[in-house]
Image (cartoon, rainbow, N blue to C red; front, side, top):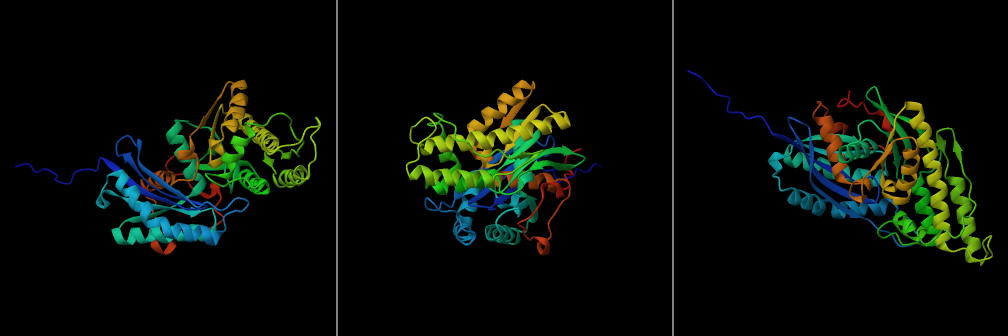
Length: 359
């Protein structure tokens, strides 16, 4: 007499990811093939808190937005994914880094789902989420990573199950520099200040306003550039002329700022490529969706016989699916976050994460 095992092996693992480290609230559902590990995006829903022109987003206001929209965004993500609650293996959330109040609000939502549905929790490093999603979407095997966002600027390479930071901003992140410059020009924050700077910069190029260029080895600094750019904006509004005798325009300023800071990013990335012997660059983070940055990085990589990998705004800008993907990779290696340890932290270094899922 023979018996058969009625317990069938799962064909796929599914995670729901929750992101809310800044002004983007995102919930996404991803599936990994149990045999091949291939990732399939099932849903990726996002809602953005937009503050008035000339202002930034305060932690308390951003957290209030995330609390108000969490349930509807989560329900939409689950509906779009077409999966049942019973099929979900784990709930992943952004543990850090990020803004304290928004992080805490979304973590509370993730805990609630885990308790209601009886699922395991997985805390995820925000930057690792960006990297792993970028690798999955683009197919980049072992690139030097340029991580550029509103809160972080890092040049990273993988070694011995860690994402090692080779260079970074010594003060403010490049995205924060752009966002604050947008406030000086009173540029709209809808859909994003960086995007609106990019569109204005396309109309510039008549002159290149002289701005500080601050690269120190593989590190860089943006606070001095921002201060000088803000000073020029004040002079521009007072009617100061450019070196060609014509009035300096907002488009000229956006063009000049972009060209300067992006040239700095290209330089430190090229230095890291030479150091580790890589010919691939993967750009991740919200600023990574800037086409001009991709063009400049592409020119540098082409001269080295290499290539640039980047994603569009669906995956570059903060989203829940990247948290689901990175969290599920960790979950599949046995990692769990006990409820009593499901905290958040504003400081969570990329190289603190043990990347068990890579050799």
